[in-house]
Figure 1: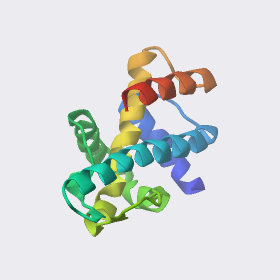
Figure 2 (figure 1 turned 90 degrees about the horizontal axis):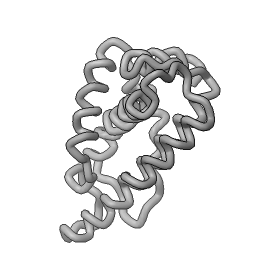
Figure 3 (figure 1 turned 30 degrees about the horizontal axis):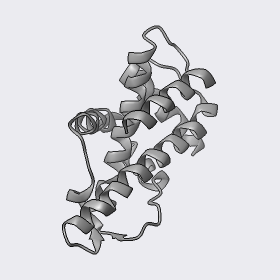
Length: 148
């Protein structure tokens, strides 16, 4: 993870002109895992509604906005090569249903999209922000908990 800090710092600079440091990485990991858990809980409900006993990639509720962030992540990732790191960081929560291989393959890009989206939300909520502190993290978390 130490090697990845500089890559995440660069991703936040590229996506939203923000400076994060190694102290923000733990917050970022927690944020990603919380959002991923929420997303996959909905995927369980979708899989069940579609009569499946396994979560397929089409069950994961990717919104238009998240899809756009995934596309942005892909463009940044060509240079930063974070997909491999995100593959190791992304923790699939244990849920009622298991995951199809397509979900596991898509996971790093979903996590990348969540990360880029987070950076861009910081910029939208705090246009002059340089380095997010606890108060800004808590505010953005509160926004996501309402909308996610």
